[in-house]
Amino acid sequence: METKRLFIALPVDPIISRDIMKKFSSLDLPWEKIKPVRSEQIHLTLKFLGEFKIENIPDLIDSLNKVKLGLKDLELSIDQTQIFSPDRPKILNLGIKNNQNLQKLYDQIEDALFDDGLAHKEGRRFSAHLTLARIKKSLQLDELTPFNTWTINKSFYTSYFELQESNLTKNGPEYTSLQTFDL
Image: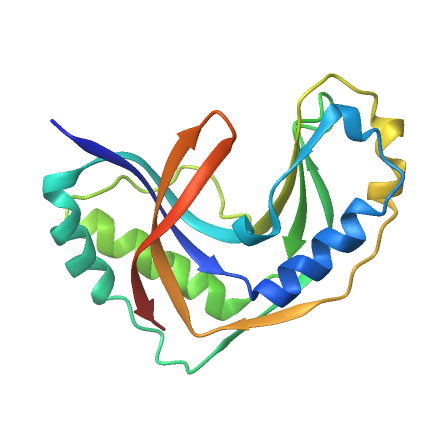
């Protein structure tokens, strides 16, 4: 059984991604302990599917084609910095402000995939965010003060979501868009 490692995501405009990463990399952080993502890899994950049977990808695409918000564009605004696992910091990200249309998109994807028997529904609440870096060496929370106090006011628009493949390499994940879907 052949599989591909898949996820569903909203893209972020490359100009916005580069600007975010430029400002992020200028923070006074212990960079020897942090592995930033590449700016072209920044995205908002809607659903991680994991190892997915290749033979079921056409059904997955058919299911995702049913998802329609009826919007031309979806505006998303960055809310605040976040640290996943603050007791033992693991991931630095930017939270996205609550957005009714984003939640509707997430819910439609969850329902479509569940109804078609392609994925289970998530047990945890959807937390929209953009991952900026992973912590590769243990550090103290106070070392992240420049990140915690960083304010970034950015909004971006997207008119589609994507089915992405993630290939894990020794240099980090490589993403390939397999299909795009209009909102």
